[in-house]
Length: 119
Image (cartoon, rainbow, N blue to C red; front, side):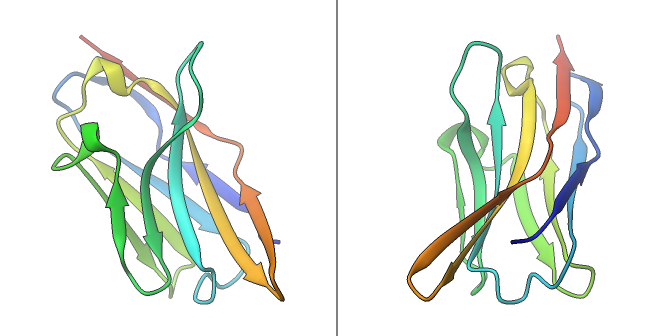
C-alpha cells in the first residue's frame, strides 16, 4: 500500500479558490486510480473527482467546470484545483489510491483535510 498525505485545505469565502495536494510515499506511476472524496457532516463520503493511470478523469456532477484533478508523477502528487467554491463544498476532503495486484484490490486513504466555504 501507499501512504497519502493531504494538504491545502482551509477557510475561504464563496467564489474563492483552493488547491488541495495529495503527496504519496512512493511512485504513483503504476497506481490504477487516484481520487478525491469528500464527506460533509451527517452525509456519506462521495467521490468528487478521479483520475486513472492513463489520465482519464471523471467528476461528480456538481463540481464539473469548477474543479480540476491532475497528477504529477515526478512529484508523486495528485492535485485538486477548486474554483468558484460554494458553501455546499464544505467537507473533509480525502485522497484515495486504488491498486490492483494479482486480482486483489488495495485501497489507501489519506487522513483528510478540512475545506470550509463561508457564504
